[in-house]
Image (cartoon, rainbow, N blue to C red):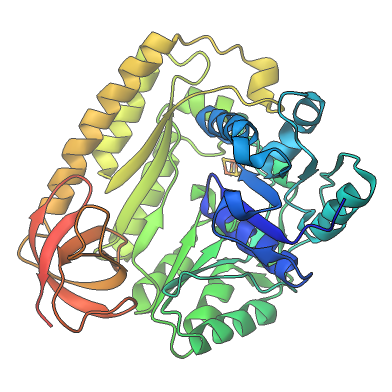
Length: 440
Ligand code: SF4
């Protein structure tokens, strides 16, 4: 076999996966591979996968079939990266219909050049899904091309073991990067013209490096001259001490946005999920956030139909979202993930029909709340960082986000550019976005 030269990576799932693809691209570029924009131009196609939701898995399986059945792609080599690689490695490799050639888990991206070269030399399928207690990729500069927002992982893995979640099994234990190494990367991002940095971690606010906690790191990042906006995701409600909220309120460049994953509103269900807080404690955190950070925008994640969830218990979730009034919510039906405690111990006993009914009701309630929240901005002037000029439907439309992270849409005017921050007079609202016009 000849040596492979061109690679194409397609990414599914969360921001951490986007970031991991940037790391993998960087590793491959440094090893003389050429990255291409289309799978049809590539010797090797890699799918960086997600195992968190069932539909993400299905999408990846469909995509693999699409690639191998494409007549042009008979000789293409296919690699699977990410969470699904760890979770389904044997099923993927043993399935002759899928024709998977190699697999690399989230801690094995540095092995990619070797895995690919070995495959071309020996023709043998291989995998490396070893989980590391040390790997943070702090020595790899991701291959970024966004230009406005830079993802930056400050920690990896999770120790929480929520019973529904596969992350601790596919991404391993928590480990954090050294603060100085992170600050140096933020300085390089400023030099490269990035306006915004989003700190990433499966459990980002559990960051800990020696004596430095998340609040200490945030202060250091905020002190970097030239970084206009700092965001972070995804946090756990248990790690929001008051000093962190106070720092967020004080610092102009820390965005007033908090994602506070609720998952469920009922104490028994929360306990069964191993979320480590009850409804009253969650409401207390949300209340403290609103009191300490004026104008903060809060979003959440919710799962409906967790095993044994009754109608009355589901109504507790409605109660919490009505009480907190999140700006938006990512709402999912529970789906069993292999390896998790819930999959092993709790039969998935809430019917599909009941789950669908609950999700529809919750989406309707949240839509009304989102609209009410967004309408309250009409008449105000919001500072918006432009991250898109021209949409598929309208080449003259501009998109950006407020400090709180709400998507805004407005007409183009001369002189606007990506990465520019403009003041926008808000004139309209929908549950998903704000509409306005530039006033400066
Ligand atoms: S905190 Fe829970 S939901 Fe979040 S990554 Fe860890 S185990 Fe998964």
